[in-house]
Length: 222
Image (cartoon, rainbow, N blue to C red; front, side):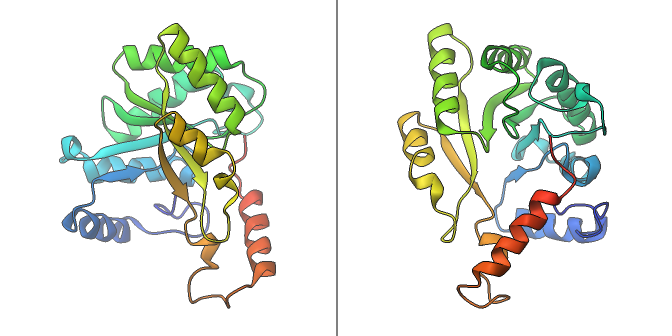
């Protein structure tokens, strides 16, 4: 998310290269991004970084969030947005397939059958190896994985949620659900928007709320 400077903050290409080299040197091999991050620049930078080492990298990216202002064909969970988002992500990432492809957020509009069948078609085409889902209610994920199992479609293998010592809501339903369906859990914001670092006094909840409001105002909504 911080690869690229289009949003007024983030890392330059040179800094991204340094981070990637240090990451790989220490044995890192899993990279998570999204088509929306820094207007697609994040994927472009990552594509350049991994192009000579693709087989050793487990690559995850996402779709759902708007890529063109005011055009419903370029946002949401529907088949058209998924097909064209995947197409452009593959081009930016300079790869033939995505190891883990996420629904970035639930749009509460597209039907579950359309989402599941669209993703399953991409898996059968060899463009995706596994599918994941992010920031979606547990009851919806449970419904979709049950439908997928009954119909022989690809089930969600990964779940991404905000989870940290200051955001433990997933422990109520999402984490037990992931355990029941044998889904890998990938937390985002594990440092609580910086609250758990030395940059902010312990217990500064007001600052955390301000940071969360700022994140919600970030130009990457559905």
